[in-house]
Image (tube, rainbow, N blue to C red):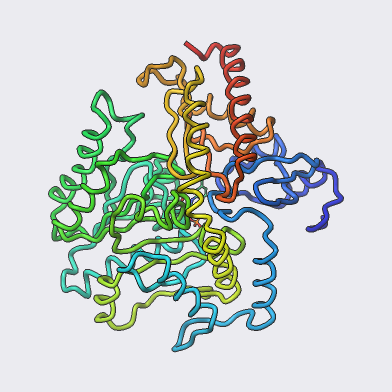
Length: 463
Ligand code: PXG
């Protein structure tokens, strides 16, 4: 197999992949029976597969390619850094210019109360760091019993032991004895699915108050932190009602627990603001980041640390924690160049003022389709809820996830990557998407919904 300028037929690539490659989040037996999809190139918002098809990347890779695929400036920055200093660590009283520069740039784009960063290679690692950091914080503060972290059902915080434990995915907890002790899950602010007949704002407050109840049950003297995504991504683009975040911030402050806002998906412009916490006007004590930090060009993540947490940890002596690749110079160089592009091309502002509203209007129109129970979007991340009996919110498809999977497969055939979460369709395109590309995306979504409706009727699934 050539890794560049592929000349091999898809069948040969599939066969080799099936023989040797174990994929993440995959039923290996059924994948290998069906045959994997092979992507050989990408440019802007477009992917090319091994049969030469062009596919619109409606998911920005895996929610990460914020500046789009294939920018030569990043390749050049990485190439130059490789030649200058390909690797050195940041342990043992050592640093290097790329780590210094990236830390400085991050302090510029984050809110004023955040001025430090701890580097990791991924979002999962960042959340492992978070767990140890919040527990250490309270040890240093002289309240060593405050060790429990409250998280939410259907949250996604990564796939390592700590990440998957903080996450609220039942299927993940079912494998490998998770969650680890000391993590407590409460409800998510998912109005469409779980709001019953409450109005969204009343529901937002009620769900936030579950945090207060959980703190009372566990005991304030035992709770270290609450962790949540501004908008849940992998859980199905769950956009909380407006009342939710202010209530969460109030509760965390009154009860003296740290607030961790997981910015792995929402960070770096996804909501039309630099961070999801900016969009909701909520001050975080810690913010794990990854994905859009480098637009996925190289693996890098981190934990952004507020002054309050930094001051406390400074009193604690050595923090016995770090990764070989914390602040990897080449990954830092990619991230610095990525942030330069985001700033100089005003990409975040464009999402807020131009491309976001433009796609949101198309999305609202798609919401009128007979298959769609709700169309929701903030910035450039959204979901379409498939329902069998519009306008009923209560009536859902019987075998949950079947309609979503059918729709996702049809979407691929129509040249669009949309992700299915249960029976909702998710979109999170590169932030550089143009108006023409948004028009094309909306056309492909509409055709996909039409085709899906025909397929579901044929299966007798509509009703
Ligand atoms: N936090 C959040 C909010 C995430 O979305 C992570 C942490 C973990 O990051 P790493 O870099 O370790 O993957 C994520 C990752 C999906 C999907 O199918 C979503 C993620 C990863 C893989 C698949 O939606 N999010």
